[in-house]
Length: 292
Length: 345
Image (cartoon, rainbow over all chains, first blue to last red; front, side):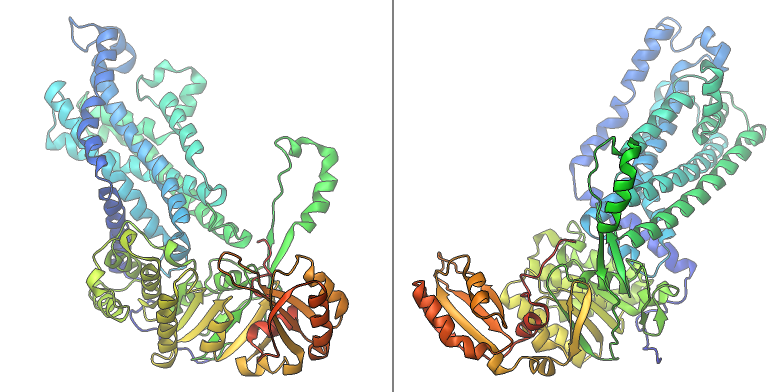
């Protein structure tokens, strides 16, 4: 059969430039949605400040006001006496977990609800780049929060930020985010099939909150809890970031945590893409892909 | 091509725990299966404006979604622009422009330009080319002056125009249009129909137009496939299809206040013809009912029908031996009207 010319673009070619454009367009689209609702700015302005108050009060109640924010008994299991910076760093990294877990699955569900999912899935581009764009746009708000929160840490809790600290921390956060994207892909796949990933994300949020050392060291957990905690990428990211920021360790001393993070990232990203493609095919066969 | 869907029934929260029900469940599963497309086999020629005419639930959207790779058929395949929809999805997608679901499938919080720019990126169009193409399409759609307004401020017809512009962004050789004038007022419907005609004639696009509006299929299409219950029941040019109904086979009765059982009584009196109430009376608007007798020797039953209606004190406004339409063909072939043959799923 004679094929008709497809004018407009060399659609058979998939260049890095065209793929990056997909990621960029997805980020721009999501930011424009965000800006379409101006109330979000009020939230953005006050949230980083309000967010600290419970941690400070909790810290003062536990470690007392005379020797502010330091506890010797806490130092025995945590390796640092500084309770509040310990918890604040935990919460900063945990905010990446929250946006990643809730973001991508919800974003897919919203596309189905709007009726745009059909058009996204029937376009000739590689869907992985759309998903990366979605994940990155979800991380933007987390990053803005993290920067604001770190600024408050520096101003009020004496955390020193030098280039020697910032660069390794960014590296660890990127490794954490990659693993979280893999998990978010798994939830997006669930969202394709079951049209709702919120409850699963909620459960995952609790699993991370309980078994990763967000508010307390891993040693506080019973042995079985520690085993679960050691399966979570957040655990290694927290150990590494606290080690760099509070104990002034270098990246080379954290090679084991970095290696484990890389292994977890590779595994969950592979599993995430595999599950997403599998669920996409299954829902295309069952005819439920556009349902919401 | 065949596509089946399973209609899930609620079986109670703990239904899956009861083993004794398992056998019943397996039995009912087979009856839950809805055949949305039943061995569809049709060829659309290059440059043709091909209509797919059928009521809601006939399988039109399922076919369009299978062709656009949104759904995977259970059996069979389709070749689009020389590419197989099962194994060459990327090239099939690049060859197609699609309008399915209309205005709801756009981002209402974004402007028309932002919407088109985003979808252009999904088709890997370079920014410069995309910008130029978007300007051209906005010009064609007469929406250049409102390109930077959010779609939430657009009318339904304007949003539908943007949906068509999106389908044309990458200048695909083939267009799949599913009910492109659904819900539009007559002015916008006419504009959209003119644009579809222009796309076929001036730009030589191959167009598959799925519609349940018989006038649309009749006016626009080179050939029409009539689809009902997932099966193609006839394919030909509109004129040839209409020859399937002879003038003597077609009687239209316009009357006021017919009782609800009128169709049943007429069917008893004229067993060899198909009887359909095409338009139900609207007392508020003062519009009468329209009843059609199609097939057999409808003409011979005129006196019987008049006697019966008079006997029941039904006021007859007019009685016509009409020129057949595609809807008459549909009624003759399927026994239901285009708006009455709807089914769930």
